[in-house]
Image (cartoon, rainbow, N blue to C red; front, side):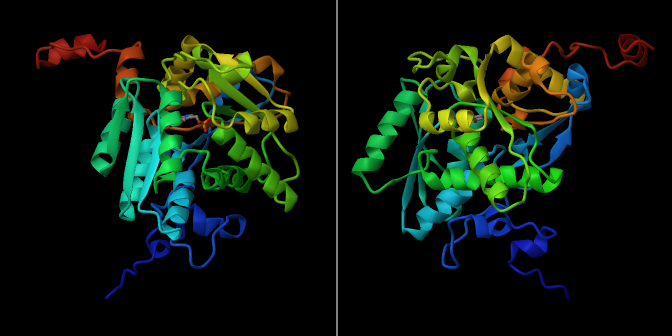
Length: 363
Ligand code: AN7
């Protein structure tokens, strides 16, 4: 009889999550309880139709982090943050969230028996994310305010009560998220020339930069990418140079007016000779549709900001270069957006009849 060990490695062809895969690069030791859902190891997918729009023999890939266990890149950070919280004896964690952080926090916290408290901006969290937080068993509080106001409350709660903050101000979050850069280099054999990332709190872009720099230091990559961060035009404090008090965008995940990692974002941009640029909602939605209908890749609107940004800056891409766009979240997170912004629609009210249906599809 084959015995299935309770060891994830034997069940997953060798993949046992980002902490085991990159243990020497992470602040864990043998006593850290690893809380994992086997996150990471997400595909780097070529997107030739998008590359064709740039030309000049540019290779374009998307890092599809929407294929993580809760459907976003947040799982990489959360396996670290929750494992370290568990190690420290925490019984409750808290976050403010536009949705994805709350889903990931809820899943990992509940997996190890902790309370997950999440504070969200009422009316601005996509349906799938809310569904996840509820079913995972988070205690969800919707405030009459935006993400930035939710984060202020959460920081105060974490200062005054025995609750661990798991927003990206928690340094373990970025440590976990930097593993996405390791995976990109492990596949490409070097860093890309450009890395395009959607930016909200600027945790992810800072984490990628940490990852590339760390790999560069140990000789795993020879070059470092230009970090290209894209914010939604209605919610672009890093481009404006000051916080935005009433941010707005269709990409609710990045509807953030005062990025928690502002200083790290600027440092990343300066040391990588990168740029921050704004993309309009129309440009985001165009890239969102293009990815789905031409490449077969369904991401959420915020994630499409990376591709929208690349297309916007296409004339700046050096010929022969390699570009990676990060797709941070799964399209299924926001089914309302997909239906509302698709230029496709269901032909309904049709008789169940061969001639009628054949005629409708042009035969
Ligand atoms: C799909 O969940 O801030 O620049 O509270 O969900 O690291 O903030 C989400 C952010 C990009 C921006 N894409 O990343 C939250 C939250 C998606 C996201 C971002 C988010 P950061």
